[in-house]
Image (cartoon, rainbow over the protein chains, first blue to last red):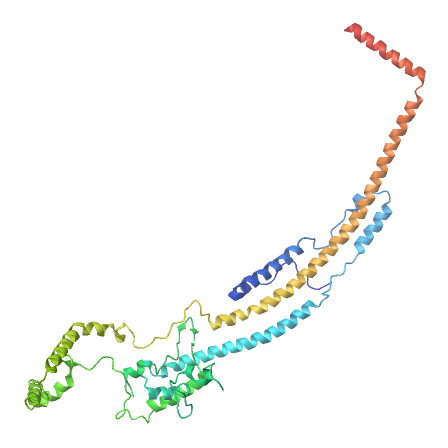
Length: 172
Length: 261
């Protein structure tokens, strides 16, 4: 018999619902409905082996020895707890591990975004206001975006969309 | 190096739009380089423009003036009058202007031909229009909250932007999800266990009930059989003489009943 027997959900569903992204709400609802169904199905039957009134049968049946035999057998019966035949739990653990790895990478990415944004916010004020910036300053502050005809020559009219690498109709 | 026209031409584009809202930082565009690279570039540039080696006295950082320098009579710079004021007094600049015009006209450097009237009419009307509509147009322009010279960064709709911290918080729901999945497996096992219990109970009870029913059926049959047997024996024991007597008795009873009536 399994060490843990559950009869009701111990999961904090409210907390989970709060954390579900809006695009997965439908899936969450289906999952919650299924889980609720499992819980309600458990409560369809008794928790332990129901009692049988053997005294009643003993009084009604001509052969009480048979009833005694039945009673002894009924009390001695051991019902095996069902096993997780398909090893679903192991599969879930495995899934969780991969999901954790993915989410760790994702969170690290998000954390990097936060750090970047903070760094950006701390430093954005050191850039002169847009109105006070000259072309020369723009070249110094944003050398990767400013036009640089020496290192990165461009074709007229020097817009991004007009460059051959960005034009789908260019014949190489 | 610096002109409104150059700015208007779109040489500079809004690069960053930073919005501080609920500690949400939306960085719209950091094209090309990463943030740290940008910061490095900015620090280098700040050293050039605002560093200790910058000669701010001789080469000050040029800024776009908020308004035009003051003018007199709609178009003549005020500085022209102030420089001449010390040497010539208040009337000096006017005398200079009239004198210069007279000189130009008398020596026919400025030839008064047919176009002269057109010239005067044009500038007179220009002056009048400027006087009448100039302030209104000035109020419309950028610095006083009217039409902007510069494209403002587009604000991010607050409802659509989800904070990154919120996303991280959402990610923690995964633990609960897997907990729920494991629990679902447990719940199903529990259900099957309880089903087995119920099955055993049902089977045993059914057999006992069967025995009880068999007993009852047997007893009922026996009873029925006994009743039938008794009735049969009694009817068999009645002789023809007895039957006749009982019928006579019945007829007599009926007669007495009829006499009473």
